[in-house]
Length: 415
Image (cartoon, rainbow, N blue to C red; front, side, top):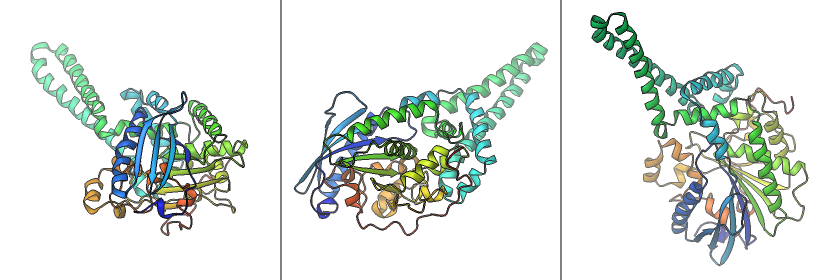
């Protein structure tokens, strides 16, 4: 058996886990079901037990309870998903025209600020992922224009000999209608194409050049209150997990808690796990002062343990890029994060890796899923097992292939 049973005595019997999802409009029950199915698979592979049950506390964010049994050690974890899917859903309710305006504005911000070119120096994968919706939406528009021209020409051949100028008008309207209908069809298929979804995602961060929109700041403050309350409870560890863009939200939330002295000295261990982070997409924007200040501040605190897990196989994340260092804000006293690799190509069997390798969106969620040949990264043991995040990675060296070069043009932490 690999994992925690070999890592010393049990230090966690009760844990609170706060999961911060990325830009996702889907109800958080999705994460409960993912945890249930993938956790059962990982437990069977690795040789421990996981049992999910309904949330035990009333009110507050959406959540569930899980009990992990590893060897002779039993640990209980109360999960809560810090929900912002409603904000995401609202931001995605854009018409076709508004989405193309978003496209132009977002591309303009990333190109003229120099952020795009500097991001390319880090990892090409996430930049290609960012360019995908731009290119795909432009292709859709060109196809719609071509279709409109063709339909207009065809209708004109059919109608003008009989209707004259009126036929020309009908043909024009028919062509415009056909082109728009094709755009509507593309939008309806976006659950498979992800062009609109990704465009709204990048536009949401870019709309204020890296600053958090007011509605998101309000939600983050509420998240901080919930975590602060847990830090006064009878828990051995409070673990905050941020996935994708949820990682940079977690950075700011925890920085706020520490600055406000809301982390008790004798309280639960405070741990922070970032997965598949895309921090540079925001921190490289000119007005991301808050995020850059929070990265610098959090990286030097000894009240927390921060482990950043990415994988080169995840084309949507800035794999093995130290989010503090590459953002150009690493202080001399920097301690965090510990940058390690989930090593998809090693911790998935050859057949499973071959099956998933080109499913980019699915791979971005692999951190939350089972590995059939697991190494030292195990999401379910980290969140439901009997040792803290710090103990699990005690003595673990940071990835030798991590990127720490300060590439960001914008390094100011205040306006």
